[in-house]
Length: 433
Image 1 (cartoon, rainbow, N blue to C red):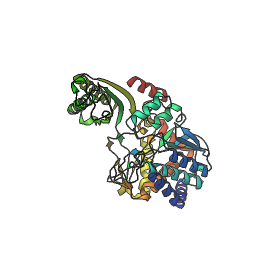
Image 2: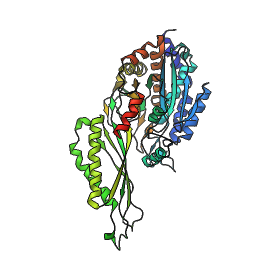
Image 3: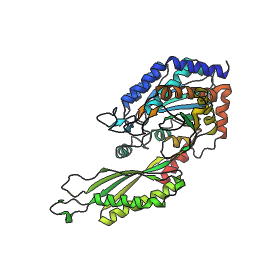
Image 4: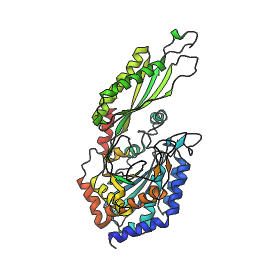
């Protein structure tokens, strides 16, 4: 069987299961869960793995699920990932009423696509012609949210990192994995699929201002207003923005998660969270120092105290050229060249960036949604493009990589100069933070 015939059979197998794949994506869209709490999503993934004849390992990094599909031989191991979690967007019409979680970032499509690709490779029999194993991963907690909650998990020793892929790295789940592939849903891009490009990385901060409570009406002079200290700190951050170079793509966006206790008490306990994002580590850390100075200055001005807890964020994303080229060719075959383009630099961030610094990785953007990311109007409006097309494109790319002695996969691995090993990666974050 030649490679084109194999890819045709894979796509046909996915088409036969189109309704099931769409149902997966729609179910998750209506049942969003936040990171390290994705119980329903993890159960669905594990059940689908079992239906495919696989033996899933569950509760990895709290809620992650992993299953391995053996090829004809095991020359390389390719991971196909999907993210389990949602973002916080209480205004979304399908938001969870208790948690505010909503799939306004499209991770539900990733899980549908990952499972769809697995269905195509297994039910078509294609996996029996491939010289590599495929490791399917439902990964938790890509959205870097609920920082205070996750920091508590770290302090309790339940996790080491706030991001799920980072936690997979720590736990050794990516040891022995040679290449990684996933996609992300997008809105508003000119092409239906955009391949390549890069993204920002970031560091996280958990900030606690401590003042002195007092009666806000009767004796405000007896207190130290931590909220005013925080506001001055934020103003100091704003004053730094003109020092950020355009080419560094710096983004700083703090929020106040606690502004006091009662309206008639001078706020003595004020808490903030922020990222400091950028295109490269050096300018990120430079901006991070400026942000810290501003936050400390706010405390000093009011006579308050401030504690700044530095947290490892995510690294900028790298797309490997050979994998990107194969994915692009398959996208063109599925949609036509006029609908496939190149990604530029995105100022958002993802923990796939950390993986991409350790192994060859491809992370294209696929349309199918309208509205704004992380907003109440984000909707999946083209189920075929959001769920089915990426399932086919990933499965076809897996065939390209692992067919004929896994020649393309081995070439991508040989040509890739990894910035980090697992150990040097962990050492890097330890030294930076």
